[in-house]
Image (cartoon, rainbow, N blue to C red):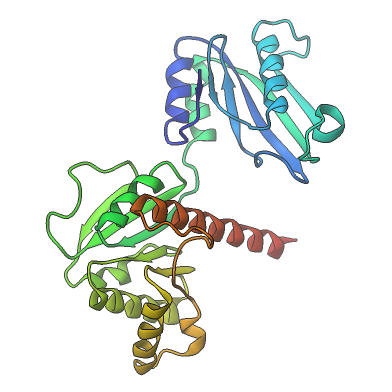
Length: 287
């Protein structure tokens, strides 16, 4: 059995570890094109696997080595490292190099593992609008590395229960919530009215002008909607450079479906792209 829901991985690992030992397999370092990034892990039990390091043959061999360690057949002891060149060693097309770390763990290691593996870095997202697309987005974003603030001006718009890492906020006027957004929030604007959309967008652009801490401002709608909004925002003295910060239409290009779930997937993919791009820029700055 393989568990791959990132929100439940650590909880599942700790629960199983209370009953039986495991070998933790972690991607320690990477070079070139590889299936998963450094820090990715899986726990191999005698009868189960929690998580995944990806890579097909890479993972298959890692599981076999972990089970050997678990059974005491591997002479390297409780800790081991393995460098794998994916092309020459495994015939995989990725072609990069992965350094894997193997570690026997048991119930007494639970507290340390919770500190090491817990609290993943989450990107804040502010979603304005509780319509059909908003509901679909909340569901799609739930297992992804985001922390969602879901905002609407109407009463009774949110579901009775929401996924973890989702907080609901009633704000009337709705744009009054913008100053309190978490720094570095990705903002999605899809309220029930164009008037509210425009007010929220103007408030976001004002905050971006003053604080520069909203890296993505997305507005749902067509090119014609954005043309109309652009004209009105220019009348409010926003510059062309400031308006260029707005993404409209939203979602990765090439997905034409209009169903709420399709839009939600396209938008979630675009948000992930922005996060990856920001991390790449940060990495370049450190080189």
